[in-house]
Image (cartoon, rainbow, N blue to C red; front, side):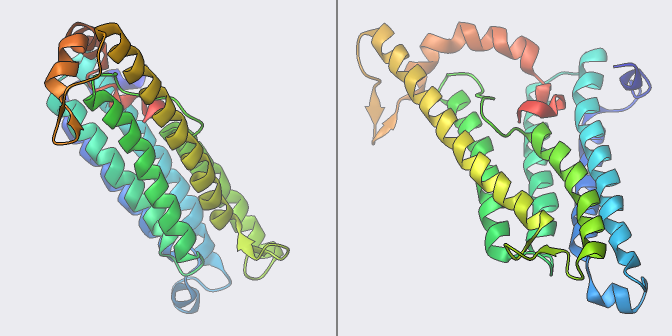
Length: 253
């Protein structure tokens, strides 16, 4: 990535934090995108809708810097487990800021927003839980982070157009606006992804149990992770050599 070479003098963790700032600003813009208060004060004649377009810009910058941190880390030899951990944590906060800004906005049904946010976080949890059990990070599924980013860069533009087509920007037949429909899509595809990752991890754990010729040791009802790790240490070491700071590859989070 040629653009990454322009940031080789920057600390990768700094780029990660910058991506979070852009996510927060995107969430703020989404929240105020249809604000009656702003319409009556700062943005007459529905001009507050421009904040939806500004949100798209911030989401693009969030995705860009989220990709740059990993690239810069590898170019400068600063890849580390701590950097990878920070990247994934920041991504979850970014999801909360962006989707949360839509979820609690005046134009969104809070129930749809809450379901969408919880589902998105569950998708990430299923991936990391597979890794915690020694199966490697599970990136499979119908809806990854890059998919959400692309959708959130396209939908707001059409939502602005719909605000001019219908006064409240809602589809009359279903009484939902486009951003609410996006949250419904996130929820449905997210649930499908959670199920898919769960099944994949379950099957892989079953194969590993069969390879060892016995079920996993259990302590207090949970899997003895040290036992599983003995089987996966070699594979995980190889994977980690190429995976550290792969958080820069937003597609699979």
